Length: 355
Ligand code: GDD
Ligand code: MG
Image 1: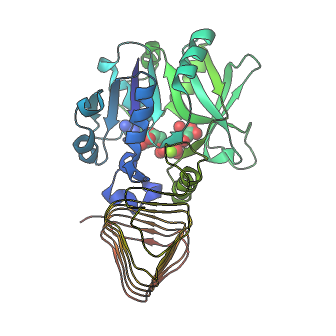
Image 2 (image 1 turned 90 degrees about the vertical axis):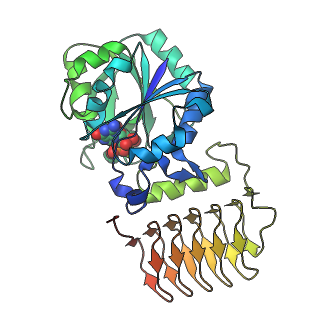
Image 3 (image 1 turned 120 degrees about the horizontal axis):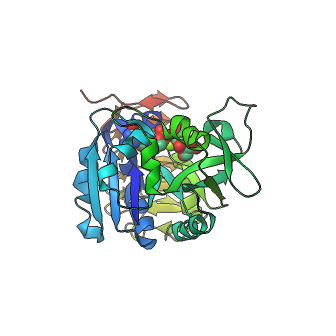
């Protein structure tokens, strides 16, 4: 079995983080998100992975190489222009040898891929789609099916109040190779808006595999922070023990309010307060009397004396000046410098696109 992981999106909703890091390489508790996905594929017995990429692909290639370190085989296909979620599949057709999984590259889930294979085998048809029930279906692709689980309609991102169901496309598909015949070549094609409706219109069967697994689309800052809260609390099983974890946890000073994850070479001043729900990646420094709550700091972030940081994501090597206040929902980009005493209001975006 092969898997295609869609990793070509620009991650616009995660800017300025994604100015410097493509969405699949955004770290989850210090490990690039895509590495977590690779682990899940490996556990399901999948060794052959195709990555249609296009936005900052070199960061992905540099980290994973040909996959041999993971005992996997990775094929990269770089798009000059974004081809869309189906166009990207058509563009890798020559590498696909049989039935295959497709994964949206920004979904964190505990879905059991082997169980989904068994479901597809039992149901037949051209493919099976993973569905999940959510509170606000309008942000996703709604999928309607009958009692036999056969899908009858797709409605991508319906207006609020017009959702036909609370079951949404969870971004994992298992397809027979024939699905590729339904996608036109050489142009941008959306699987959600064009290919799924076409498959149904031509009378082919797709089946809905609804589960109650942990599931979150990391594409928005608030979801990225929520995912970390769930990992730190153990709600999303990720082989992290709840409490105080990480290579730097043992030597941490200051007031630590678990759950907190601290990586190697982190320095926390004795009078600083860190937690709850904080991840500090390698090499972070937290100054005297500084407070960090509900936040994820990537590697090498420096927080000055007396600074206060609440529910914020801070990308690599950013520096927060002494006495600065960063209010909840903010996102700070790579190498950004927040001046001493500055106040960033709620949901601030701080960081420039690279020149
Ligand atoms: N190679 C490639 N080329 N990948 C792409 C392209 C492209 O042109 N466009 C998007 N992708 C990748 C993104 O990187 C992401 O991993 C995945 O395709 C889905 O794109 P998003 O931009 O994250 O879509 P979404 O979150 O708004 O909606 C999709 O996911 C939802 C579940 O998370 C849809 O599939 C919805 O129906 C679904 O509910
Ligand atoms: Mg998404």
